Length: 223
Image 1 (tube, rainbow, N blue to C red):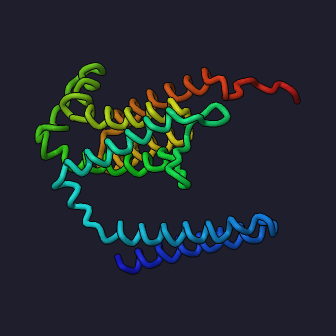
Image 2 (image 1 turned 60 degrees about the horizontal axis):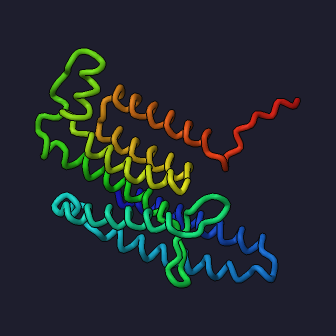
Image 3 (image 1 turned 90 degrees about the vertical axis):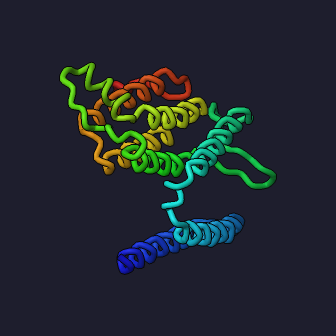
């Protein structure tokens, strides 16, 4: 396991160094100020990565308040960004002094953490989950939302996705949904439930993208 982690860390460092070299080679002399800035961000990211790697993830299972605090803080940032001026028809960046960032990037991580946390504590909080095998489509859907206890997780993820769609940020929304879906599949969600939810999410996002005035929905029929 240690060898796998070492290979993964070296691969990430190699990709980061390659990206920094490409940025330096593609920059004009007047734009070279972005290179040290990017290098500083990489070093800061490495420090955050080291701290996160030392964190015992099992604490998340023992402290529900920590998950709640992380989720509420993310929601607060996503709401705050909606009150910014924005640009090009979207509001994605939140500035705090001279520092600016996209709360949507934090939402990607939080979606994975919240999904993994709920899938881990669900068997404990709902010991009868996934034991029922009702017949009929509607009964199976009701079993998924209620007896299988996925409804609270879908509501949490829906809150994040809904705020991202209000920005609007369709790309981040799809990443959040896809990442949460992968976690639920790893947690052995039944395939029929997964496909049903994925189809609903795809149809909903596609309809919103089609109705968004900032998205070019015209078809080029020229040959």
